[in-house]
Length: 305
Image 1 (cartoon, rainbow, N blue to C red):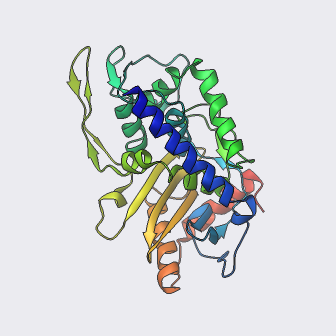
Image 2 (cartoon, rainbow, N blue to C red):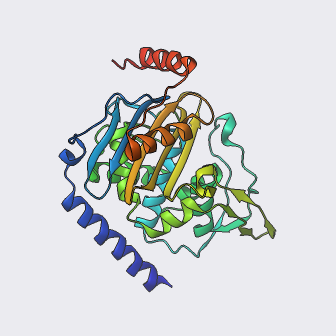
């Protein structure tokens, strides 16, 4: 098993090295036919064709904002990069500091779960205690793990990004849509992350004591026949609004979308549909006046021109 993990890690590293060699920072700086005025309910957004590396849609792409549980995509990459055996059983520890009110978890303290299962439910269902314990079991503990997250971000060219925790519960985890497009493109190179994040339903088994918990995907588009979602992560904090990153096949090409601080529970899904309609047919649709007013308030509070 250990040898298989090492080989898998080597394949990941090789894939990322090739992607980085082929993808300069400039590749995300703009392209012909860039749509910069598409009406969206998200304050900041980008869409990138992963095949050609063309930036297709951009709305305040360099605004640095809280990213909530979108953080967990980086968390998952750091776990896999570490080469830690995914079949290991990990003891579940409690929070060591007070967490936000949406840190609720059904996982029992002192029980055990497989690392692979914690990865899956952290991505598909945004399980915060799962993400937290993945970091705790990293060599060097939490501090080393967060350091590895920031080092990975710099390697990917994410110069406007900072991580302070592995769950996204802190509003100090901040990035730009352009930076997150780089992160999503890199994560798309990891087959387990594509699998884990798009799982529709999953019931992991725990031990000490033995019990099972059922989880569903926080992105309903993973269960839609109209969408071919290949990677996804949602996020929400009061400070971050509704966030969504995903890779979907649109018109035969893989398109990465990043939607930050969207107004309304389902607004990121609506924005994904707006981007898809624009790319497929050039059709635009309106957003509500409430969404426009919300965007103006956020832009004012965050200093976004």
